[in-house]
Length: 66
Image 1 (tube, rainbow, N blue to C red):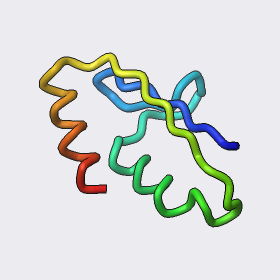
Image 2 (cartoon, rainbow, N blue to C red):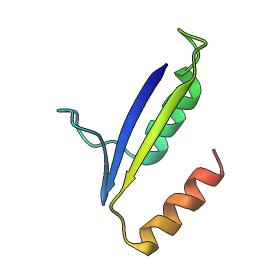
Image 3 (cartoon, helix red, strand yellow):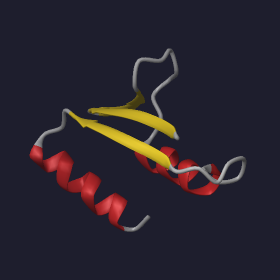
């Protein structure tokens, strides 16, 4: 089993790492494109949401098209 943990805090970042912020779309597209290239095992994506309701609605619209 493989996991990706993500926090939404006005800027999308990977949880507890020293990585630079990345856009939500870029992150989810990368997971979609590469998640099963090296391994057939499932990928669990956990999302921690610290967004306002307006930003939550925008995230919902963006993810609906992926």
